[in-house]
Structure formats: structure tokens, C-alpha cells
View: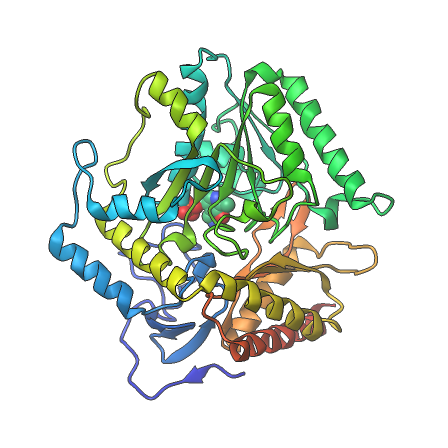
Length: 468
Ligand code: PMP
């Protein structure tokens, strides 16, 4: 599909396709590459300032779960702005923040008793790490200082969140500067870590033995928490755990008094087909702390959440009586209003069920469209959260030459054809996670999914012709 052009005049913009202006805010990306300037969004479509229209097949970064430009959410934001835009939570709360917490944790699902709203995923992970530490402090277990997490994980860019992450590329300038009491175990990434001789249960058993060995190596009485994405997102690409893995993780954590923090910033809030991704794991596990973001505000405002189990709250009540942590903009009324409006739409329109149904369709389309693509090594995911991993050789699973940035090239080729996917996050632990990720809005139609998958195939084929 050629990039669609509409008739209305493009919005003038200095940075579109030109050198970024000196006053740009884009400190975090290559200074040499100008961004695509977006002038508006509607549903799954983004309109660029140069007049092109792009299908946002990754909802930004798995954020825009109800699509762009929803007027009900605009109204809710305006209504809240008219009431009050900001209060400091040291002394105040607002009905909208209370309503949002109650709406999300109605009936205290899985023992999750309280929500704590912050501005970003990284802040939510920082909060979770600090709360976990304070939990042990309240129980006179202050020698617990260590976190165990997994290789090829991503938990955020602030120092503590980056420390538990294992995205090597993002850590390069910060070696020696990260929190030191962190170690990493193998991820449940079957395509790369399971041997051919192993059954799924063997693989689960091996991963759990490795985790227990790591607890024992560092001394389980010094471990604060095990931190894991329920479905691994940006770094390894939609990796789901093998059967029984999280049940085993929960029981190991219980055995040694270690907390379980599940990071659902990307995979939660309905994205994998249930509100919490862990609800689909065997064994009705109850994590101690869960983080969520992205779909929570659907992109209409910046908001993330930390959901806390009642047993952690109980320790706080018995001890210091408050979490020793806070941010100026936490539970921001406008963010809460946007989030509440988005989540009410999701519930009213049964969009999580739709996410599951459309996810099945997306999987089927990906498998048929990409069946003949020799660079496609693995297609994996859950709900509307799918990754396509590229390899040089499908039989040996040899990775692409990192210098080639094949995933990035596929991303470019798809974008030029009018579809935006999410490129993989580069080299990790010596294994290049060369993939693209798809995470469209839950409102996506079958026709749109068909276009996305066809364009993705054309993009992959175009790059295979050039580089394989
Ligand atoms: N955890 C996970 C699992 C994530 O995917 C991300 C963002 N991609 C973060 C944490 C960090 O969130 P943020 O970018 O909002 O700080």
C-alpha cells in the first residue's frame, strides 16, 4: 500500500523531513534523523504534517488501546480541567483519583488492595522496588538489599529500573553507575533458551532450578524481590512463559520470603486479553506488586500505576503507616480523568474480549502471510501483542548481522508503505533481538489487520531481496 495522501493542506512544520530545529526537545534520539511530524490522529490512523497517513499498528508503544482522537476522552479531560487540574496529594485527593482506583481494583482482584498512580512506567517500577524494600524494613528484615530479575528484560530508564533491566545497549554509558545488588537469570524465552531435547515442562523445571540456585547463591535472606515482565515486551519481543513457570516462581518466592513484582507496564491493562496478564498463568498466582501503564491512559495522558497486594499494605499499616515515597504529580487529576474515561470505554464496549478475538485473527494472518518469508524465525505473542523475530537461517536460528539492523529496515520499509510497527530493541546479551512488534488498538478491525499483515509481508520480502 502506498502511503495515502489526503487533500487537506499539510500543517507547516520546521522539523518535518528537515533538520531538527535547535530548540527541539528530541535529546534522546539521533541528532541526525528528523522525526516524522504528526499533525493529528484518528482511530488507528496518524496523519503526518506532510499529508501522509499511517496505520499505527503498534499503538505508539502499545499505548493507544482505544485509538487516537476519542472525543469522549477529550470531554472527560475538559470536564476535569474545569473542576480542578491539580492538587498535591500530601494533603488532598480528588474524586476522580478515588474513582479510578476503585474502578480498577473493584472487588480487590487477586488480593490487590490499593493503587498508586504516577506519571510513567519507570516511576512505577522505582516505586515498586522501593515499596518492596520498605515492606522488608517494616518486618525488621533490613538486610534484604538484592533484586533478582531476568536477562533480556526491560523495566525502565531511571537508575533503579535500568539496574534490574538487562537491556545491555541502554546500559552502556551507565556501567558502574547502576544499583549494584542485582543479578539476572535466564528468561523463559523458549525460541532462544529451550533446547531441542527438552519438553516444555523440562524447560520450566530448568528455569526454576536456576532461579532457586540464584536465590541460594546470593543468600535468600538478602533478596528483596524477583522482578519479571509477565509477557516480555520491548527487549525480547512478546515472550510468554512456559506452562507452570509463574506458579513455580510464586512458590519459590514464598519459600524464601521474597516478594514477586510483576511488571505489566507493556503487557497489562488488557493488552494480552485479560486486564492483568498474569490472570492467564496457571495456578491462580497472586503477585505482591504489579505495575501497569501504557494502555492505562491510552495515550490521552501520562499515567502509570503500581497495584499492591493487601499483605504488603498490612505490613505498612503495622509499621511506618505510610509509604515513604511520593512525586509531585502523582494521581494527577487530568491523568486520572483520562484514564477513567478510557477504562470505562474499554469495559462498556467489551474491548478486552475484542482484543482476544482480534488477537486470534492477527495470529492467523501473521502465520499465513509470513509463511513463505525465509527471514521469519519465530512468530509469538498473546492477545494483541505479537512479535516477529528475524533470523539469517531458519534451521540454525542464526541471528542476523547486528550491523544490518534487519528489523529496523523492515520497520522502515513498512512505514514507507503506510504501516507503523515497533522495531526491536537491538543487541542483548550477545543475542540480537531482531524483531518487530505489533500492538494495534483493541478497536482495530479485521480489514485493518489484513492490510497490516499484507504490508508487513511486502516489507519483509523487499528486505529479504536486498539482504538475504
Ligand atoms: N517496564 C516495561 C515492561 C516497559 O515496557 C517499559 C516501557 N517500554 C517500562 C517499564 C518503562 O516505562 P516508561 O517508558 O513509561 O518509563
